[in-house]
Image 1 (cartoon, rainbow, N blue to C red):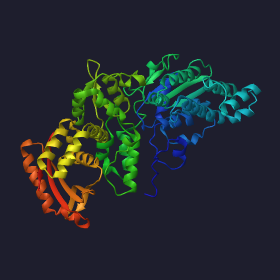
Image 2 (image 1 turned 180 degrees about the vertical axis):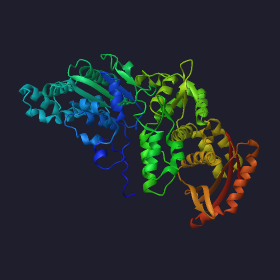
Image 3 (image 1 turned 90 degrees about the vertical axis):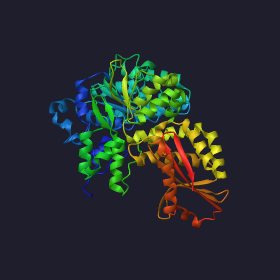
Image 4 (image 1 turned 180 degrees about the horizontal axis):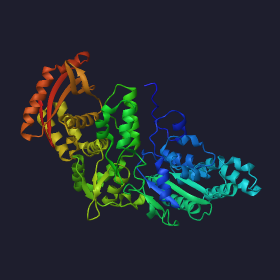
Amino acid sequence: MANKKRMPIGIDDFATIRLSNFYYIDKTGMIKELLNNWGLVNLFTRPRRFGKTLNMSMLQRFFEIGTDKSLFDGLEISKETELCEEYMGQFPVIFISLKQVNGASFEEAQQQLWDVIAQAAEQLDYLQESTTLNARDKRKIFELSEGKGNLHSALQLLSRMLYKHYGKKVIILIDEYDAPLQKAFENDYYSKMVLLIRQIFGYALKSNEALHFGVLTGCMRVSRESLFSDLNNPTMYTLLDEVCDEWFGFTNQEVQKLLKDYDLSQYYEITKDWYDGYRIGITDIYCPWDVINWCRQLLATSDREPKNYWANMSENETIYRFIDMGGDNVRYDLEVLSEGKTVDKPLSFELTYKDIYNGIDNLWSVLFTTGYLTQRGRNMDETYRLAIPNREIRRVFREQVQKWFLREVEGGLQELYKAFDDGKAEEIESCINSCLKESISFMDGGNTEEQKESSYHMLLIGMAQGRPGWLVKSNREAGKGRADIIIINRLKNSGIIIEVKHTDDVSKLQVKAEEACRQIEDMNYNEYFLGFQINKKEEYGIAFCGKMCKVLKK
């Protein structure tokens, strides 16, 4: 593998990828399509980790004056010779990201915005030597680099100075434009931040004779904020639009080539099952963050089990609130989704962050725009067929729903713990069945018997880990195999072994529970306790079917 390019984990600078031997999936065709569908202000909404920042960096490197044109050698856009002659390296560019504007207070966030502007101004220090700018112009640029002046008109001022120096209008690129609004909503200074961002955008993208065009990226389209109220109909590229639908995320053809280039083609089916499934416009898309991390894992380790890479980068509190607000109807819909089916829901694409929790329909829209759900088509009544995109996100749902479920049944768990202390299988069974009545059938999710059994296994692990003093082990080597669950009660010096089984036939619960008990005995799982001072050992076979279980004590 010595001659293979490196995987660009966490690298979103186009020049670094091209100059430092990192693998790059060519998205430069976006430049041509963007120019062919030219708009003064262009907004792309995509979930996080779909390559927005890298594409913005690519646009910057293509258009900016003084660019290294060799960065684009051999890429798709280089075939467009006339377009490259007219646009490549021909424009001053301002590129800022609002990703890190996440202050706990308005004052802190405002200072972070100033830091962004100051950094942009510092990059224009060369204008201090300009022969076309006067002393007052240069002083204004210097003051902005010091965090002084008018924040509202700062971007407009910088673009005017560039226009005056070069005699060419400016391209403004704003990445993660809505990130400050999300944090403002979470920290209760939302109205102030909306007003500030609206004024900055109004100056820079509306009343700005120095603007050639602007591009913004974000997760949500928030035009009802009146964030763009001063702009003349910005061009929107949402998850439903066919124009530019293939430029964020990886297409199936691109993933197949990537796997082939690294001699990993045998992992295509599992890659598709776990990380494909998003629909943008009319194109099926993989999450690029997941695919790159998965390929790196395959190349660097012997671990062939796919991971939840996307989940660790996303906020999951929305799912909790979603279930809390939705009641039985939402829980039923989640059960349908977990089975790989679709639900029909209206979608709104002009939400404000403060609207998110005003109704269940809004939450469906948020789950869609943030990547938890995707669409499989539109119905005649203007609703959309929504689905969980892939196994990775299905697991995210299941894990988050299980956490919510354990929180909801916390009181009932105390009765379950007492039943284990008393060693009463019937009471344990009654407690688990009572808890399962409150659950969502994500615990029965999966296509194979192993996956379904694993869901209940993880549910019991979650229940057991909630008790102080219990040391809980999962799939530990014991005797002649691996025991599903081993619990050491450190307060009472006792031990519990649990073997989990699943069946789709409720009439077979007893048989499956008996099978679990026999397995504990046949495999000598209780040998695990030989190294511990255990006063009492108990062994349980637990079989599940839907929201019912059978508990037998060996």
